[in-house]
Image 1 (cartoon, helix red, strand yellow):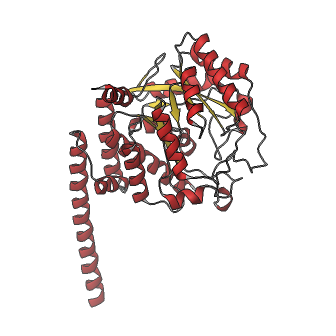
Image 2 (cartoon, helix red, strand yellow):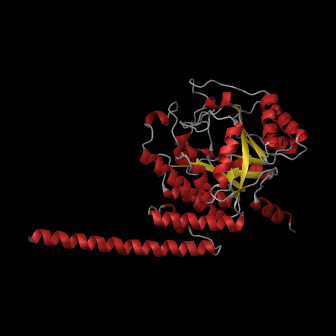
Image 3 (cartoon, one colour):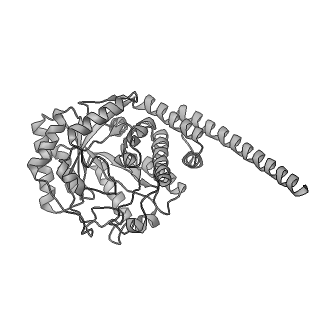
Length: 395
């Protein structure tokens, strides 16, 4: 009897302590949200506190706050970027990527110029404001010249009306300048993580985090709208790492961000050690991805943030959820269907068997269904970029 009483008293005390802790956390989250609503800067500890939220009600409050920041700074418009995955040939050997050069299980392909231009024109005719030309990394002269010709043809055949983003990896300053002068204007170069030790785990010894940072600096120097991004839910990654990632992106003054949760690929050194995600693991990765979008929106306010396809790989409505958490860019795949199964950076990539028309129609219905407008026929350039350029040109 005595023991039962003691146990009851201990349980009551524990519940009381937890209730107090929860009350304190709620006050803290509300204070941080109030600061965000007022447009004030958040301290690193506050950013970390937001990333560590787990209570459903607090999560929704975070997402709602991010959506208010998005609405105020970039509006409730989702811009389409039609992705053209033009080649899966890659000189890099990243330990997480399904098209790494050492993966012998993938059938390699390279679209010819006519195919790339044809898909860009399809996007233009279907009211996409922009396309993203993406491939595995190459630095040979033939590839560089081919991309330059393709960009010039797309600009000419659309009367300069179709925006062009490139995501083609590390290049020299001369190459970045040539592609920029050809007519492309946005470049996405994801850094994946700013933690040097974690970066080394993701890449072989011939990869260099400092070289990645240097390339981002070269992109800014040569006049691009600069984008980068990270993976979250990586093995060994901490919330402090993610805070540092956000602060790095703020420090280098990026204009756009493309980031998503890590999803293993079975034919990679990292993926072969990890069994397929359970439903719980999928939900955890999705939630972390949404939190990163929300917190990044709160911290970096007027940049462009993409709702990555990886979100949809974890949850059918993942990209729409990303929009409601602060993203404002969607990247539907316009690659010829026959090529798509061989451009899988991670397992269970969605939409590999849907043609471009199906993707456009499906996404349009789903996005308008959550109250967002689609920016058809608009480049949807980063508002942060235009403000950054004004500051740089100011006397």
